[in-house]
Image (tube, rainbow, N blue to C red; front, side, top):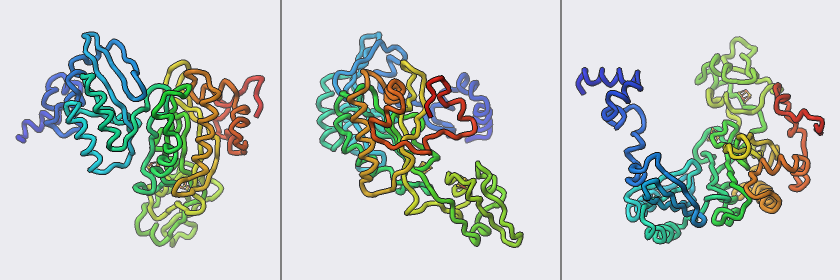
Length: 382
Ligand code: SF4
Ligand code: SF4
């Protein structure tokens, strides 16, 4: 690239508005390496043509949707569940289906469902057959459980307190019927994050599982001195639990156990302070969150089970409790009520009673500003 061209791009990079205005083609459409390609390049023709002009959509049956545009054009979507960690062969298989029936287009939803889109109704049946042939379920639309969002787990991330894929697999084996049908009262979004960094959306899902450490990091003084920067390590702790080693001769840190909340922040900054622990690590379960604005504003999830041990490969305790909650919700909630709305209507006391989850001290919100979130009405109970 000539210098003059480079400078032109550089100016546009620092002034994206003018870049879009002046040279959208050149900068946004991929000639400059400043981020992902423009999504409009990837849209199926029928979506490009009717962009922003859709009249309505409907769910024809679990996993199959029809969108109708103002122009009269139609778009059929087949939604399939997918695993999150996938192989190259798997990607080739789904691309083959997209090539054959969807003009080479497919998309992943934010919950890793795969959507095959076609303007031809006659393609819907063959897509469903092809999807089922590679072992994927069709569903996840409307009042159903969608694919479970989950994070990396032991396979990939350094701070995981639990594994993700096996728990999700064991759970979906049990909840499969709620994916392929629409018999739940409302939408059910389940997520899993393997540590409290929460790369999964556990803070705002109907049901959520989060990996928790329960022991303070083990400081390897020799390695801390060799590979970690002390001020950065001390600064990484949100509760101020990390202090300089009292012996000035030792280039390391110590941890005040009473202040540590086992978040793992320090381990990200200083790998010489691992906190994974085969005995202590486990999972907590949350309930009642949602992102949607329908009926009620978005809601945060609340802690319902403070700790369950890691029990690979099938985590039966976790599966049992989630399955129990979903079963009771399916029976008791009103039509279209989300998990959190149902709990709010019946009250948390009733929720704990129905699900037979023991109430524990960890359920009491003792965060400094918790007063804002407590129930402070005359019906305040605990
Ligand atoms: Fe890693 Fe924590 Fe994210 Fe899991 S949730 S992928 S352990 S940072
Ligand atoms: Fe601080 Fe979190 Fe490390 Fe504990 S685990 S010392 S709270 S950064």
